[in-house]
Image (cartoon, rainbow, N blue to C red; front, side, top):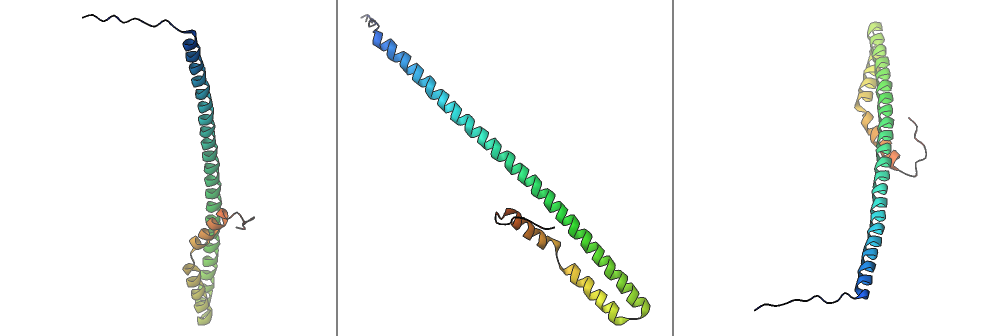
Length: 131
């Protein structure tokens, strides 16, 4: 048995609704595309700001550590000079004081100051940092 299918005659309203659906879908696509583009731009901007902040903080930390290690080296060198002078002069008290100062300086970690520096960098209430 053969079935014959016949198409219904096209209705003008169906074509109009189809066109409206296409236009609505296109409008929705454009809105979605703009929203997603804005999100991507926001993500890129946030990334760029964070990278710049990391670079700047790294530069500050490097400068701080270089300064601290240079200062420590100068202090320790000065204490060794005093130690040598005390030993050469036979002054046990001067030699002992120099040794105590050397030990005290070496017990202090410059990284403890770096930790405080990093906390200050993240603190919005800190307006200036002295290195």
